[in-house]
Image (cartoon, rainbow, N blue to C red):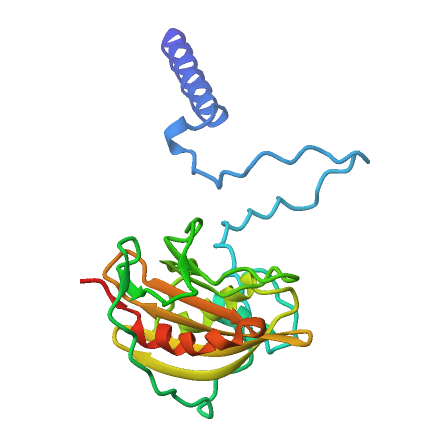
Length: 262
């Protein structure tokens, strides 16, 4: 019997040890609740202290702000200075040498141009061949050229030329003619100024007649801009100084005689 009781005591001790081992061993990994994953702490600052809270995430980039539109430019008036970028018509309005073309500028009666013509195939124009003392002359840099004889004591003399329009064409023939008249000041003495004498439409274009004043002297001049069917309109330009005023009558002959070639 003592052997039986001793065996029972040993068995009981083994069971108690097994129970104690079950309590001490940790739970299996799949039973551990997942906790929040945090970023590693930031590196300590130069003072050695760690930041008290995690860094704030950077906000996503936003679109660049729309640039503010430039203020609308005010058209300059005569006598003002020009800034780069102004249009040809704005430059015209700001040029004190060229007055505003108003309705007070009348039309002129156009005389018969005659029967003899000079053909300018580059500009698509046919223009009057003016009577003596006018004569044909070396055209360059134009395409046709007629001149009056030189006079002693002055370099000025009457000139009548044609060429493709040397400036930018505008939406209206009138504006194109205005710019052409301004351009002709390059072929008058320095300091020249325009006074309008006549303005009127002509078939497929516009005609302007004007006086050019430079000091105590003057010239009469005219421009005719016509669409001659080329890539650019054609220009006819005539000017006669007061020293040859007898030929001022030819200004009207030119103004009325320019026509489209064909």
